[in-house]
Image 1 (tube, rainbow, N blue to C red):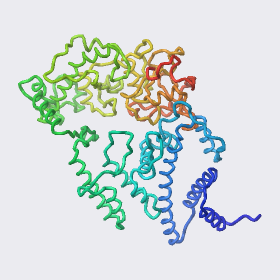
Image 2 (image 1 turned 60 degrees about the vertical axis):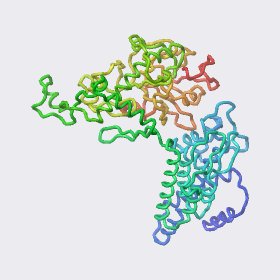
Image 3 (image 1 turned 45 degrees about the horizontal axis):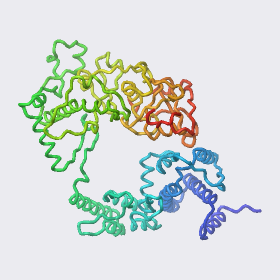
Image 4 (image 1 turned 30 degrees about the vertical axis):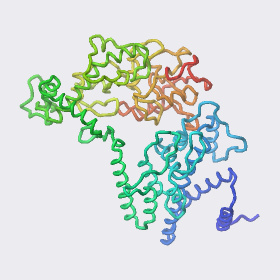
Length: 592
């Protein structure tokens, strides 16, 4: 049989695609793989004719539109088919077939988990399978809800949230990215319903009482890009202003804006009633006749370095040459109010610490760590709660802020000439670090060359406060690669389970978020001690190489060397029973 030419094959494929009908699952996968290969081939072919180049550019844009629709549709199919409930073995077989370039056996029904799902939700599976950011995966799922379909509380499929924009998304003559951008902006205008069983819809109105979705859909018909963009911006700005006029509280909150000129910028938006409370606190704490007002008026270091002749005599010549000494000056009004307010917050926390310790002693959980513990006698022995002129909040509902600064031993020996890094990644200058060290309660956590804790003690099954501090100071968050859970939301896990003879020690503890803690006990993730610097092995479908890894997001201050990351010191692999849901004693893994 004579092999068809490329032209004949293209014409034959076009005829098959033009024929209506449902393709088999294997044919769908082959066709999708062929589309990828065609795109890769076209991107490498030489072109000399400018007319061909221009036409290819237009076809590439159309291909991009089609791939965008296919991307959102595939994310919707992952949620529709509940792919995150597939067994881990099934996912590993699919990953192996993908790497070999073969098709899996699809005649048998899929194997699903009978208990807890392999992944938390479809977005988590997409993030792990496609190696994309979790927020990007969730955005694809949300986009599918906007323009393809939603699901009710019983997982029944329903229509899209924005029907008009959905029609434009599926229109092959319209760029889908424009429809998605409008849908995302519309979603920000929609308030969450009090009843979660009620699916969100298009309810935002313009000042004239017209549906914003309808107005935006009409503006998308504008041919000129600049005019269309300008009119859409005006529409959404007016709708947002209208929303704020009706309910200003939706924008209230405290927002961190990042660092600028060495200062951390925060934006505080409050209603008038809350602002009055804040103003009253500021005025009272800034009163010069009170202790708080007097403390806030203490001189502060000047921002400019002193001249060489102005150095005090107790500084050595080496320290004087560093230029760190700064003369004192009177604080400004803003600095005085900020210092007075911070002093007030710290004072109230000290007054309420006795009540917090009492609640912990009665068996409640420590709000900072999630595990019960006995009260700290250093914090409650000399404190007596006093009545406040206003109703005091429940001490168990408060959090006690803790400032942990990471610095190396040579920085302490060298009087902290370099900077320190806080638990949340904020950089401290040498001057700020000196001030912290001068007033801080030093907790001796000695770290080795690789960042492992060398010595801090040993206790019973529950990790005491000192050990939790050491483990969290070492791991600085969940150790699973890619996880962004902060250290406050993490739990401490026994790498070698307590029920199997594992000790309660810093070397046998690791910091993980609740989701990955469950994955470890379900057998999806393997934890490795690695001589005091824990690592994990991710599921095979997520990491086919099965290499021990460690989260690098929170390790900016103490980076491991390239050699240590590539050749870990033969960490022993801990065997985990996949069928176990706890540590063998029936307890929840959150207490590990």
